Length: 284
Image (cartoon, rainbow, N blue to C red; front, side, top):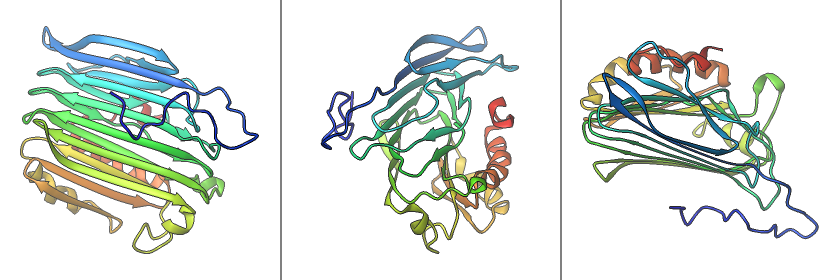
C-alpha cells in the first residue's frame, strides 16, 4: 500500500521547459523461514534496478545484500524493499556499497521505502552502509518495521552530508527521513528528520550537529534491551548519546566529522549488539 506522502510515479514536471528524464525503478521482496535448523529463502522477487545477493554464511542465519544497479538515487527514482523473517528465522540485510543521492530537478524527489517485519522469536538485522547526500539532492525515505514482542531487531541508518575528503558542501538539500517501529501492532518508536535548504550552515550550529557531516541512528529492540544501556554509554564519545525508551527498546544517535570517523564508532558497537561480525561489505 503506497502512502499518501508518496509521489505518483507518472507525475509530469511542473517547471516549464524541463523535460522528464528516464528514472530508475526497483523493487525487491524477500521472505525467509527457519527450516531444518537453518534460515532459508521462502519467497524472493526482484524487479528493475533492485537486486538481492546471497553470500554464503557460516552459521544458521541468512545474509542478503541489496544492490541498486542504477548506481545511485536521483529525483524521480523509486526503490522499495520488503523483507520479512518468519517465526524463529534469522536474517541480516546490508547493502553492497554506500548509497549515493545525487542532484535532482526542482520538482522531483527520490523515494526509498523499506518495510521490515519479524515474527515470533525471529531476529532481523538491518545494516545498510552509508547514504551519501550530494549538493542538490532530494530524498524522501521511510523505514517501517513491524515486529513481534519477543523478536529481536538491530537497525542502523547513516547519513553523510557531502564527502569531507572531497571538500563537498551540501548547500541545497531536500531531505525527509522517517523511522517507524511497531511492536505487536503498537507504534512504540517514531523518528522524524526534515532538513531543507542550506544543510552545511544548519549542521554547523552547536545544537544541530556542531559541524559534523555524518550522523548515525541505531535502534535496538529485543527483550531486556535496556540492560545493555550502561555498557553502550561507557564506550560513547561526547558526540553520541543513547537512551532506553523502555525495557525492550534502546535508541542511539551519533555524529562525527565524516563517514570514516562514524564507521570507527559504529562498527564495534554494532558488532557487540549483533553478537557477530558485521557483513563483509562493511569491511571492503
